[in-house]
Length: 441
Ligand code: GLU
Image (tube, rainbow, N blue to C red; front, side, top):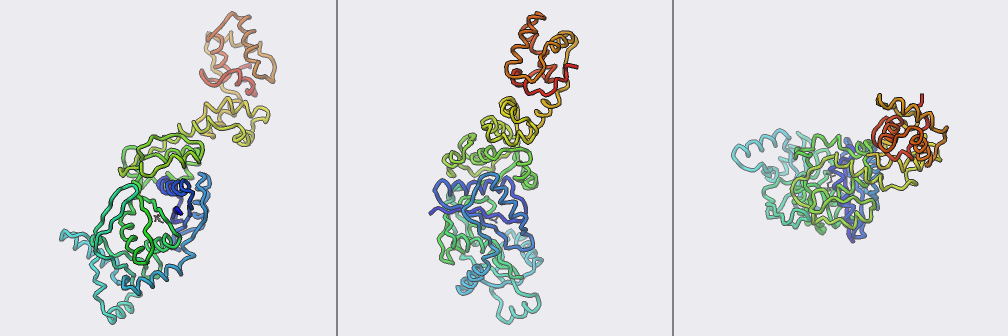
């Protein structure tokens, strides 16, 4: 059965780049009728925070990216220890004692000699006595996985055929000196034991994938289908890495971005298919095809989310926004009218408040000098409220008769006097909503 996972580390809020990963894995699982796991990669006890676990869940729930179960790496440490023992038993795991400074020096020397900065496996030559002495002096070493020096090949779901020479990669450290299991091992154990069939993640993980394939094989697991999506850049192709903090999902939510606008964009951005607004998750799932994505960096512009958000709102049923509108203070019996008047004139739901303030408090009237007398005369003819959908038509006929004005010369000064603007929603709908007629005084 198709099984995918989204595996954030709870060390911060999730951002637009993480969303791409989450969404692709979600869509693959749902399209295949499979399982989508939310895996919390919290093996780092210092940096992982429950507050971020809660925030990640809240963000995914907001988007409707529901998971079938949650796994936490911190609860599976015994599984990782067992896998480490297996690798030790196979002779694929060795302890190394170099300090970060020593490793850095080695790398610099290699680079100076024009060689790739790959760990030289010096620790493999240590005798038991030397290791004892180093342990006494420096504490426990790190544990490295001994790669087989052959080519590692896979057919990537996005990048196509990939072939990496294992000799060009350092033997990965899987356990730190303080005993902390690192992601590279934990992830492999989880993917294998949880039956993960597809792994989609960012192309910054390509080298990890190469080493993980060998670890999976060493542990007797089956290698999932890997796909690496390109990294997102800003609209000009600039790196987003420093700005991702401001592109967190909660920021976008706070700016009023609608979930389906965000999902519709991200399900297509970087693919050969055009972005199409979907208001229904089933359609989004149906229309997703990972093989349509390309390897080139993908330009992301947060501004694109707003026209899509406006379109989502235009299609929204009154029933779905009623509570929100009533909470603004709009009288219940006017709420539906308020929605039909404003829906075409907002970008985000937050814009409703401005409209409501306008209807409630009245706009600053705009009256041109040559219209002053006309407007005063017309307003004197306006019947006392409450007004309904017919009031505007009846009133303007009377005004027309009394003043002789017609067409634009009749309607525009009245619109400007009542709303302060020369454009906007149908006045017959606006009038009943105006709680005070400021221009009257
Ligand atoms: N916790 C890892 C990350 O956030 C997961 C990567 C993966 O999908 O394997 O980068």
